[in-house]
Length: 384
Image 1: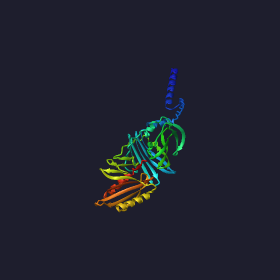
Image 2 (image 1 turned 90 degrees about the vertical axis):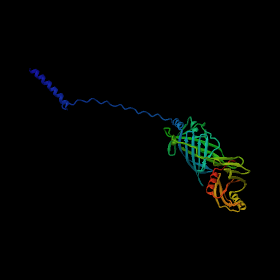
Image 3 (image 1 turned 120 degrees about the horizontal axis):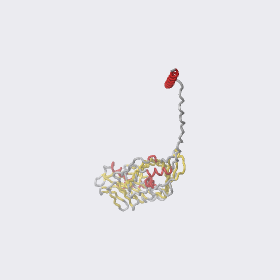
Image 4 (image 1 turned 45 degrees about the horizontal axis):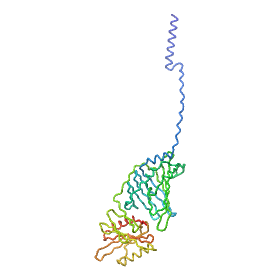
């Protein structure tokens, strides 16, 4: 009996010890060791083939609004330029402003399908009578890119950018970037692309040169221009202008000038008449004036008006015609039948030829007549 009681007491003590250990009493069990974490090596980034990435992005770009900056140099005189170039698939629109010493000049061009329109200094939109060559467009140029050569990293506009050159087979014309210089010879265009380290397009740069011919003189012209490619893939649309004018080209007299749609032109002996509703309204008349200056031409013309009409000009203001200095003379006189007549005569010299672009109309609509004459004269171009 004694031995059984001792066994029971020992069992009870063991049970009590286990209970106390569960409540925090007695010896603390040793915790299991925590496994040591094995660090995972970070993946090594694969270097981006900048040239391949840029080509892929350029080929995928079908729309965009690109800012434009640059400088035109004419006979050692630098002229800043700025503007925008909009791409919408195969259609495009450009606006380029030159900060000329005598005032800024802005030329706009729209191309939709195979038709092109242009205007100068906010004047009328004029339809180009020749169909557009699609190969002379930014979209077409981008489509020809198959590869670019990475020339390394250089500082450009304060950034470290990759300079990438296209293969020699990729060519471009001045028309593709909105320049269509009249009487230009020996035009050359070089271009390069600039991109970030990950292939993000940054800049499309151009260096354009040509010889500008004016009579027997030839002036070298160069143009450096950058297009900001950050605007690629931006949604854009290009639409045809409303009520564009039509351009008439005189092969006999060697000039062209635009007029509102619906007008007609008759070619006479030594002059052309622009008719509204079948009635002569504006006349273009060249005169042989070898050795003349603009002042001499104007002086003799004023004397001729005074002799024939017995009138002096109401006004005599400076302007331009076909890119040349010009004068605008205005007159009022009364015909023998009592009808009051208004004349606005714009005159200029080009080489050995004096040019007149003038309107003759019944007095009373000068506020409409003069701006219309000036708008037509703003489209005047010599063709030979």
